[in-house]
Image (tube, rainbow, N blue to C red; front, side):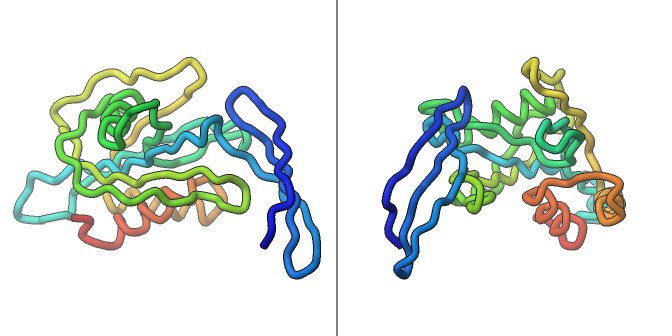
Length: 191
């Protein structure tokens, strides 16, 4: 693969690239987008742990968001997520975004993935998936931006499976990243 040139049309938040390339003697053009400054993001799998030791894991809950997404012209079920601010660590971004979008505070960071790519045919956006335990006794009001329309749910395994069944019946839309977390959460002992 040989990149010949990359023409960029700058936007407010995204840049549109038209990249000309040559591969195996043939030329082509790929159109894709990047965030300004290639800003990475976090996606947060936030768990409320069950206090009932008699039935471990059974009543754990996953924090789920329902957010209006303009490109979908509708609501998407997903996970709390957000862009990293300049000079902010993954941990700092996770704590800030979880509090802003859900009102929940991080009690314990369980795991942090390396940066992975969410849709490499369309964008070079990278995300880190962070699993956290939330402090269920410490919930504040959401601190949403004026452009955000987010409803928050805490759902157990059965409720997550019901949500996934609604998506299979095309009654709702679910984020691809969230689908993988939902599936794992609903099938296994998550921690």
